[in-house]
Length: 142
Image 1: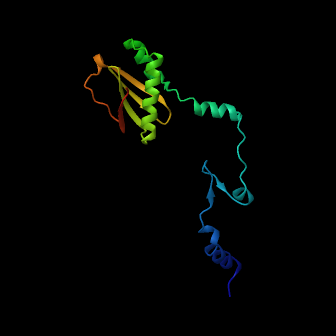
Image 2: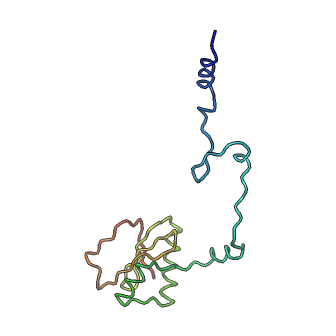
């Protein structure tokens, strides 16, 4: 009826594993067998206290580009301005913003809300054409 090579081809054609999507982990590698069902949590080198403190620390970081621009334009943020900037970022974060324009004290600042990072700063005297792109929100910091 069928010879061995034909039987092998038929078996390959109806093999259900060819049509079922394999499980894929975050790195894009296929997981099979027991490792697909039992994943071990990654061990962190950070303690719980370190993770908690980093989450509670809501300060806004300053990117290298923003630091260079601030130095060149003579812009210094004091502690009250930093607090107001953090509060403005909190407001935008609550509304779901990702990249926001923050207007404060004759400055325009673009902030990456998710990473809580000040991306760039422009003083009121040097705004150029006043066009800001790639932002999804704006807030006036009181």
